[in-house]
Structures are given as C-alpha cells and as structure tokens.
Length: 226
Image (cartoon, rainbow, N blue to C red; front, side, top):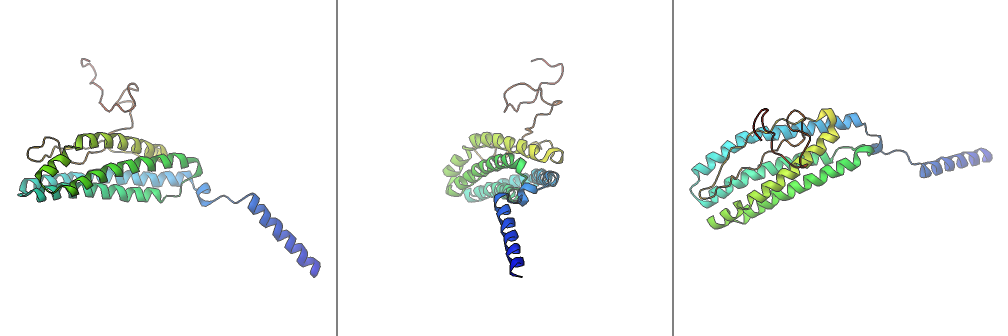
C-alpha cells in the first residue's frame, strides 16, 4: 500500500512538472479566429449604426442651435452632440477590448486599440475645451480648434477602421460615409458637427492603388480632365 502511494505521488509530481514546463494553451491562444472575426464584424456593424444614428443627432443639433438664445445654450447643444458621439465610440471600444483575442491576431488587436485611444483623446480634448468655455469668446475659440481636430480624427478613424477590417476579414464591412451637413455657430464658419467616418479602406473600383497612403480625395470621374 505504501509502495502504491509512493508511485501515485511520483506520477502526480511528474504531471505537475509537465504542466509547469509545458503550460496548457490559454483561452486566448485557443480562441477561434472565425468566432473572433464574427464578433469584430458585429463591432463594425455597431460603427455603421452609430454613423447612421448621427443623421438624427445632426438635425437635432441644427434645431437646438437655431433656437438657442444664449451662449450657454449654444455650447450645450454642441457639447451634447460631441458627447453622444464620444460615448458611442467608447462603448464600442469597450466591447472590442473585451473580446478574447486569438494569439495570431494579438498585434493587430493592440494596434486597433491604440488608434481607438487616439480617437477618444481627440474627442475628449474638444469636449473639455467646450466645457471650459464660459462666454461667446471662449466658445468661438474652442470651435476654431476644430479644423485641426477634424483632420487628426479623420486620419485616426481611417487607421482604426482599416485595422478592424484586417481583424474582421469578410465579417467587417463599412457603409459608405453619410454626407455630413454643415452646422455652424453665428460668426464662425467652421462646422461644429463631429466629423463623419471617412471611407478609408481603398476599394479598387473607387480609388486607384496609387498616391499617398492617407490620400482620401476621390478619383476624377472617368473621362474627366486631370
């Protein structure tokens, strides 16, 4: 009996040693690539839904600004619009960050998270500038920072969506961007509407495979002069 117990103890120790030397694959390592891509595809669909929902939000912003009688009312209308966009983005990012990432896609996943963090930083930065605006001069000064903010956001959204398509494969498809109307404050020419997603992943039938990597200008129609 003592000999049997000794054999069992030795065998148990060997199994423990094997597990320490050759640890079992984690859930992340074993995650199904196909299942992961399908979940990324659902997040891409969420991005499409958020962009579509912005149509009603933009009309609400236009209505509120037209009816605004005070600087505070103007600021709050713009602030609410940008906060809604930022909140929707953060919710989708939280969903993305919670996915069980296959080991083979870990690097691309981290790159996507990095780009999403840059987007949030830009959005929250403008929101903080709006929150700090206490008069018309401060509000106009905040809005005049938008051209640079929009340009940065367009680049970062482009990179994030390109990464999502790499991760989601055929499961991830983005709708064409919805034309964004111009909504301005009195005396300020730049639109206060949060920038819409640009069509960033080059489609052969839409853009020729030439030019700078971040060139987002559409090609000239066939037969048109250069």
